[in-house]
Structure formats: structure tokens, C-alpha cells
Amino acid sequence: MNWDDTPEEAAFREEARAFVKDGFPASYRPAADEEQSLEPEDVAGYNWPVDRVADDEGRREGARAWAAALAERGWIAPHWPVEYGGAGLSAMEEFILHEEMMRARVPTVNGIGAFLLGPTLLVHGTDEQKARHLPAIAKGEATWAQGFSEPGSGSDLASLRTRAVRDGDEYVVDGQKVWTSLGQYADWLFVLVRTDPDAERPHRGITFLLVKADAPGVTIRPITDIRGAVPFCEIFFEGVRVPVADRVGEENRGWYVAMSALGFERAGIGATIKYEQALAELVAHLRSPEGRRSGRTSPALRQEIARRRTEIRVLYNLARYTVSRQAAGEEPDFEASINQLFGAELHQRLARTGARAFGRSAALWEREGAPLGAAFTHMRMDSVASTFLGGTTEIQRNVIATRGLNLPRG
Image 1 (tube, rainbow, N blue to C red):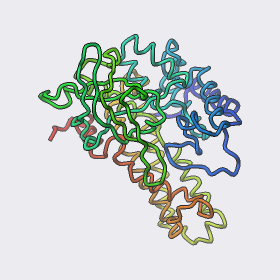
Image 2 (image 1 turned 30 degrees about the vertical axis):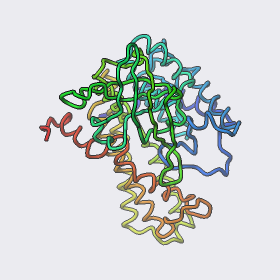
Image 3 (image 1 turned 180 degrees about the horizontal axis):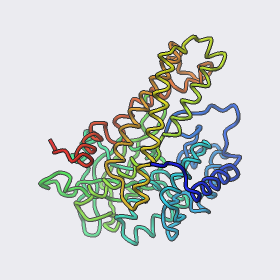
Image 4 (image 1 turned 180 degrees about the vertical axis):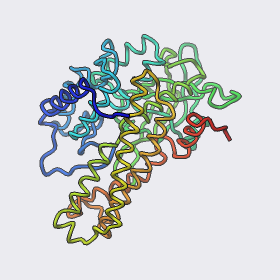
């Protein structure tokens, strides 16, 4: 395939690059000596859902100004129809925009709402749901979190036990969700609940609901991860009343709505550019006088770095291929699982390469005085979860086998 931009795409790339350069608020930029993150969920130390409610006024106002600048062009959700606050861009133009933002190390805005829930509502939502929720997402005014996983129901999501019982025009929800990314910063949650405990097959008794994060009966408790960060939380539902109007799709058919959402989650460019930048910074360090004095630039390490570089380009092309399917009007399917699987395992391989490059220094946790600010040490801890968050590697392989290769189910 020819991966070069068409003339129209090249012109849009230049437009996007110029906008990011001139339009990103100076007040939102970190100081020159502020540490830069190489972790894939952050972009150069930014985390927009957190920044928009930060105690630091400059950080908070900068995040909101950036959202306003993007929203004015419809670029928070650029692929959405204009009537819902998008820009009506093609899937490839959206890909190019996000690529240029990542290369410039500036954050996207409202990722879970714009890239997971929004596309799902466009496919499965009612007109009222689209009109109510999509414009608020596209303006950066409402943030969302995904309430799927539960204690004991992660990879085997169909075994979930959070219960919803119909009571007139409402559902009454009781249960627990866990590992909910950024849930403590969300205004809304999209949640899978069990509405038919006697269904012949477990996935046929599940319903997809939209729940206000501050609804009576919702309790959110942040969870600290292995790095000391707080990127996710557990959520408890005790008699939470949810209007039937906030159900997406049919009752007991929420599994199929959720599969659409997971396809969109796994389909994007993801951390590809972050891996590319991390590897480039590692190479630059090893070529520096400090790196050369370490004596660790052996032929074996150089070959390993070359393999990582090749794999990063493979991941980039997988992302391009997936978006080309979207551009043809198709929903991401097993191709998105290939992206997720390859990217998750590459994250771990890249972190191990950095650890080998730094030797004993790879054990340094404090950023001050450590090579590259201990970035690869933190990446290694972060990468532990890569092969099970968003669906374990075993689940991804099953999806690829059954949907992509048409192999029989076990």
C-alpha cells in the first residue's frame, strides 16, 4: 500500500500543524525545566481530564482554553457530524490531526467521551441521547468514564454481576465496578449491568446504561497504582436510579453495544507516537557523552533498539490500516484487536529495552539524577498492566482467531 498523504491530506496536515503550533495556550505549556513524561496515557506531562479540574489555576485555565480552541473548530471530536459539534472530517483527517497533536506533545481533549462513547452513540443512540450528550462532549463540557470491569469480571466480562432491576420508567442499579480509568474526574459513566440473570447465555442478559457520576447512591474511591499514581478508581452503586431513557440500545442487548465501544477503544493511533518519541530520546541519550561513558552501547543493544524501531513502524501502519477501514465506512473489528495486542506487548518490550540500556541505573525511581529522569523505570512499571487492560492478550488473540481467521470456538 502507498501510505503517503494525498495532496489534500498533506494540505490538511500543514493546517493542523500550524494550528497546534499557534493555538496551544502558552499558559498550559510546562516550564522548560518541568519533567516530561514518556508514559503513554500522558502527553508531555498533560492529562486533560485531570488538568481541567486542577487546583493550579494556570493549569486549569490552560486546559479549558485548549478545549475551547479545539471546540471552536469542531476538533475535539473531528470525525463527528457538524450538527453534534464535530467538524465532519474524514477518518483519515482525524487520524492526521491526532498524529500531529501527539508529535507536538499536546493533549487530545475528552478522549473517553469523544473516541469511545461518542462513536457508540452515533451508531446505537437515540436522537434524544445524541442531542443531549454529544454537543457537551464536543465542547469539552462533560467528561465520561467507562464502567465495565468488576471484581472477578474483567477478561470474562460476560460474567459481570452489577444488577439493574426495572421499576417503571427507571432501573435500580446495585453492584460494583473497578479499574475505571479517570472515573473520579468524570461527570458521566457508561455502565454495563445485568438485567436478565436467567438468560441462557450470560452476554444476552446485559444492558448498556448512561449514569450520572454524582447520582444518589454512587460512591467513587480512587485507587493508587504501582507507580504511586491515581489513574483509576472503584465505583459502588447502591440503589442508583437510572431513567430508562438513558439506556443505549435494547434491554438485554447491551453486550453488542459494548463491543462497538471496545472496537473504537482499540482502533486508534494510541501510543504509537509516544513510543517513537521515547525510543528517539533513548537513542539520543546513548549517543551523548554521558551515554557513551556508560559503555552499554553494545552490538546486541543496538540490534534490540533497531527491532523496537521496526516494531513501532509496524504498529503505526497497523493503525493506518485500521483507520482506512473506518474511512471505508466500516466499524473496527478484529483489526483493532491486532492493534491492541501488538501495541501492548511492544510497550513491555520497549520498557525492557530501556532497562537493559541503563543497567543498574534502571532501578532508580526518583527522577532527579536518574538517566532521562527515570522515564523508562516508570514506563516499565506502567507496562506491567498493558497486556490485560482494555482486554487481555488472550482475549485479543481469541477475537483475532474467531473473527479474523474464522477459526472455530473452543
